Length: 293
Ligand SMILES: Nc1nc2c(ncn2[C@@H]2O[C@H](COP(=O)(O)OP(=O)(O)OP(=O)(O)O)[C@@H](O)[C@H]2O)c(=O)[nH]1
Image (cartoon, rainbow, N blue to C red; front, top):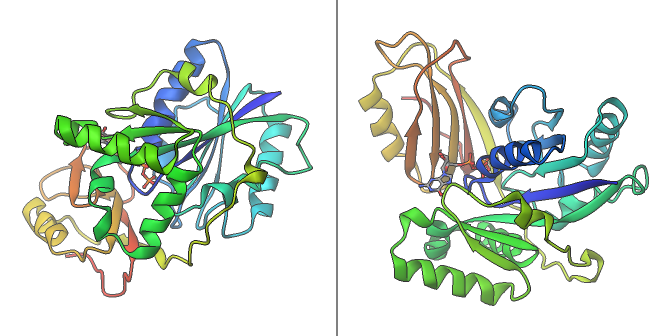
């Protein structure tokens, strides 16, 4: 049987960061991992972060839950037919309800080949403290992702004071008393902690209705390089309803675009290293009118 792990958590919480550690550790333990990813938006930046040689299938422009689990089922079926692996790691989009995403895994097509280990939710601890500012739909999705987890990583602990760290763990535990909570920085957790996890019987769990999120994604393409200050000013002026940006930004004076990430007001630049399409995906609510500087 192939062990299956589902990684859940809101946009920008650290799921891809976790995925990379887990691939590494699974390999060190002599296992062969495969990955199934889905992304909101027509491009997948995260899949470029998965190492070569790891079987990967991705479902773009939608999420496992909402664009029909049939497509995901078919993709997983193909992965099983074409590749040999021992562990399947599934990264859901931050906009997915974790229980709905399970549909694709519990398919009669391959029920006898997959052993579902559980849902790991990566929670952005800083976001947790500021959750009152999220729109009600986004907040309830965040709570659902916490409530259905078998293991919760209270991530981004480096951004909190010691007393805030305690508050976050205590509050999260009160929303899901049966899950183990591990405080993490950069989602650093031993793979053994995931292997020990025992999945709850999902069929018995009541799923709170999450009204439809108005999350969407737009791809913005640069026609020419921008000044870094100009781009950063533009970021500061974005509406609060932009939750996440990722992509490649061409900066004036540099040969190649810089890989760029943004989650809830915090930007991260990575060095340029190769020619990549100069474009970004912007994810959020009410994105009409969001245009490049
Ligand atoms: N300060 C801090 N930053 C973190 C931590 N973990 C991840 N990040 C950063 O947060 C950003 C988002 O991390 P990802 O792993 O891409 O998040 P994700 O959940 O896969 O994002 P989506 O694919 O958009 O849903 C990146 O810039 C990471 O470097 C952490 O513990 N502390």
